[in-house]
Image (cartoon, rainbow, N blue to C red):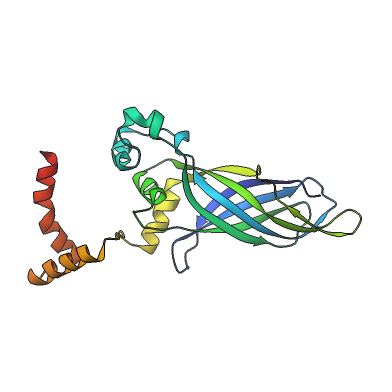
Length: 216
């Protein structure tokens, strides 16, 4: 029966995709080298291990919405689910490197997107929790099926600049915000009445008064 170990080696942007996508290079090694792995239906839960890095005061301010005041972070700072990923790993013996795509959302209602946007430098601590199905031929030549145990996991430090550069590539100098339709209708009517040429100009006229109220 295969005894697989996993290690996330690298991450890079996939430049031509329908939505922002990162490609993770995952090294897979089978301790039973005589076995021939025909394929693996690989799955992973990807989490952000937010307690595993230091945050400066500026970043603490940007994370206020997610975790509250820093003095309470001992209670509120918890691992965040980012997403689930899957990939088909082709035939190999011994060791291989699989490419695992991860589609990233720019929806700021999603906690993981808020967290990654708040980081300016350093790395985002991640953990991949692997599962899936292995199709292989054992040392006696019999075709077998086995499940990947849930305890198989791998840590990775995603450089923040890789994530930022990907989002800038897909959304140059822009951000994406989802609002209720009735709020959009009011904003659209305001933009039309004011003959503002862009959404930015319409919103900028609304911000100063609200910002003054918040400051007071």
